Image 1 (cartoon, rainbow, N blue to C red):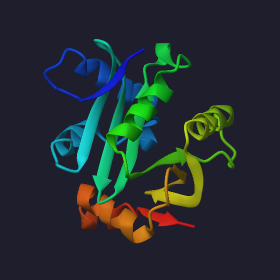
Image 2: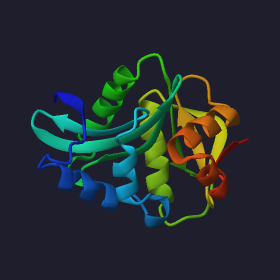
Image 3: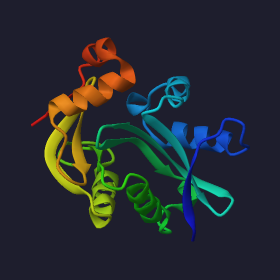
Amino acid sequence: MTVRLEKADKTSGDYIKIKQLYESAFPSNERAPFRMLEKRAGRQNVDFLAIYDRESVVGLFYVVTRSDLAYIFYFAIMPELRGQGYGSAALQALKEHYKGMRIFLAAERADVECDNLEQRVKRRQFYFKNGFVDMHHHIREASVVFDMLGTGTPPTNEEYQSLIAGYMGKLRTKLYKMAVID
């Protein structure tokens, strides 16, 4: 397995697969409109990355950066390839790509009653196995509260607000009530 990261290219034949993966991997209440992701992917602080093994697309990352922060908005591996080491290899490649940066993500909480608790616990274990830790903070994005997992020290609310405002704009950030909470 030789995993590499490349900018997702709209002109690539793999782009449709990436879009389909995005739309199938995340619940609708946690998914931003794909056109918005595409539009913002052209910005300097946004990386929409396709994950490849040789010539085959195996997954995607959507990462927003600011200063020494790299926030994984979305990460997914093709369903038929899960459990084969691609996720771990992709995270290792991402850590190399953002070497020296604090990487973090919003993980579905595993301490609430839900239909997919077992899946949430497995995801957390996957991230822990790959060097992420529970940062003992939460991220509120609109009406959904997530656990913050990551590497390095957790971002402060001010750092998070700055990152999100750089991505979405200050007004949208306030409208959607996005924040780091304890």
